[in-house]
Length: 354
Image 1 (tube, rainbow, N blue to C red):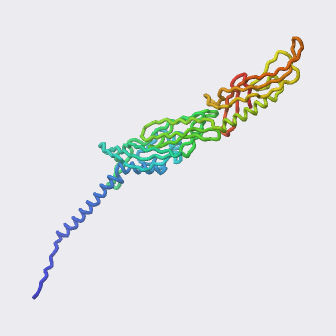
Image 2 (cartoon, rainbow, N blue to C red; image 1 turned 180 degrees about the vertical axis):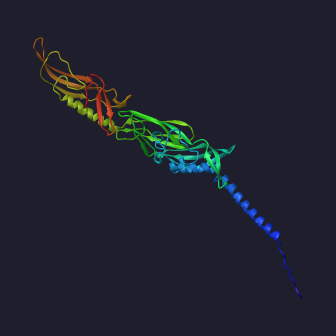
Image 3 (cartoon, rainbow, N blue to C red; image 1 turned 90 degrees about the vertical axis):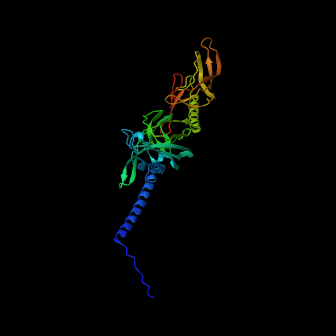
């Protein structure tokens, strides 16, 4: 028995339809992929996430180069007010999560992201920020581009009292960064920071210390204050005490009624026989405090003792004078950048200490 197998002819129309179907499928897959990418990597949320990751990695230049990141008028990365736009002043940003992405219309989105800020001295804060971004054309006509509609910058108003330098993060702002002139006893300024930032401030030097202050700036356009107050440490108090002790001992070594440049003296109307002899009975308890323009000595009291033979102008008799003479120290104290301590008298009856 002959079996005849009939081959089915495939028309050109069917081939064309097959190719069209495959092409449409490919276009659909591509369109679906592009849509998915536009909603994620190339979406408003992805743009904000990329910015936060860039800033959190300490890439300041990369963060500044993102579309819509603009500094205030007249400010450049080399300006004094941009001193906090440096890697060593920044902390890190981790655990980034977009919690809301609201379409405000006309290509504008409000993106809310939560994250953890971590700064120097193990300071940390969990917070969130809102960023307003807008569509800014496309790449290859397909993938969305975005830019910040509101620049993600804020302002830190910094005040440093009793010194002219401050540690920010792991960096240092000195008198020139803070605009402090020679002899200044404080400084400050307004500094632009990228949002979000956790600015960790402190002061630690040979003779001075301060508390650590952490200032969080999560919101574009906000202004926050940061105040650092330096206070004397034990080394400063001991150094001042040692110098004043030596000074008082030198005063006591002078064999006169009025030791030159010293805080104690004794007026006698009669004649003295021989040289007076001074000694320090009570050294003042030294405490250094901040004044308006220099360090000062807090209220203190001491006592010197004088021994001298006195001859009466009335009857010529000679008697021994032995008494305690109270005194106090009233000096302004200057601490220069090299750690040199100098003193200046603040009243006529307080001697000059060099």
